[in-house]
Length: 429
Image 1 (cartoon, rainbow, N blue to C red):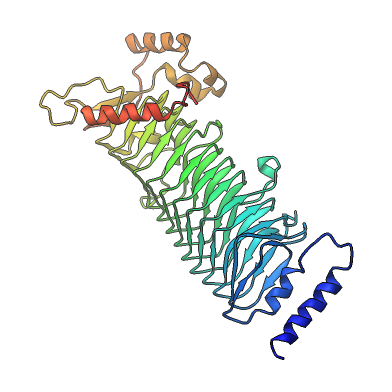
Image 2: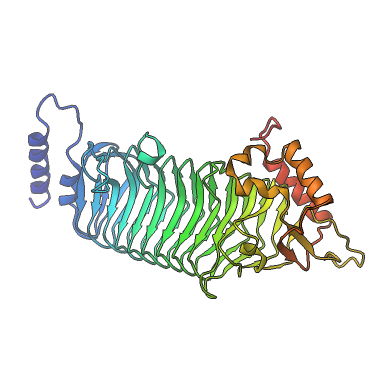
């Protein structure tokens, strides 16, 4: 009798919710949630269920990849108010369109959640973490509404949340991934493509960003007032918007960027001068290949540590707002493909320092409209004439006292980078 009664109630609710002629085949998801006890597992039959729905107890929902939750264009499709909730194998669609209410596929307010193997489509925001800790967002595929990039929502929005893992997800055609006041999270192995800002950290210290792939967006990884970021082993390619940069760091102390590949971007790194001795950026063992500008520094002085990086095939290796913006950085042991010295003792380090001065190639930095003519024969001739017989002593931008000399293994790696930049037909991508 105890088993039959809930089923009768469910049947009655279904009849009331869906009169004859209704186009939906299943009652609202909320009815099934009401019949699932705390700690229980809700295995939904294949089909479409209607939302919005709110989860107020620790349960697991299993969709097996054959269950659709349709929000009907109203609010967030699933709101999680309880701790220790698992959502797995669901397709979640049709949230509301309110930016003020951040209508999302999943609004998460409980700790210890596991959100994995879900497909999120045609929702304004994807997953919204609101004061959440110790949760895992793994192997989801998230796409926003089909609008201009500025009118989409964030694929992931994290607010006052910490110690979460975002791993193995694919974000396609969303606006941004936005992390605000959220320290000590880990972003690992995600793929982000076709958005505006791939991942933006604002007042969010101590985050780890590793082994992600970012392509086709406007800007890559941005750190604003976020100390102690560790950005390593990421692959950032084909960010061609002139307003964007693979890495942007501003007013953030002790940020480490290491072992990343930056390929075919408008700008590889944009960073301001450290406003105090603690605001130092460590750029170590990265590879910048075939970018318009590899590094851009602005401000009155340097102070960053730049060791062991490789600069190959970039139109301009470094751009500055003033010669002092980069001159005082700690440059050492970098590979420069335009280094003109020798390594007579064979120790792998150039016998003379590598120095970069301001010549006529500075024109496009001072006059942005002339950027169109950069690397053209006209500017090349002007630059050659000024190097041959300068009217005044050129200003020094940087000096690397120990430039790296690559051997055969480095040349092979460089060739691999060139091949990676090509389409299968062998033409520039």
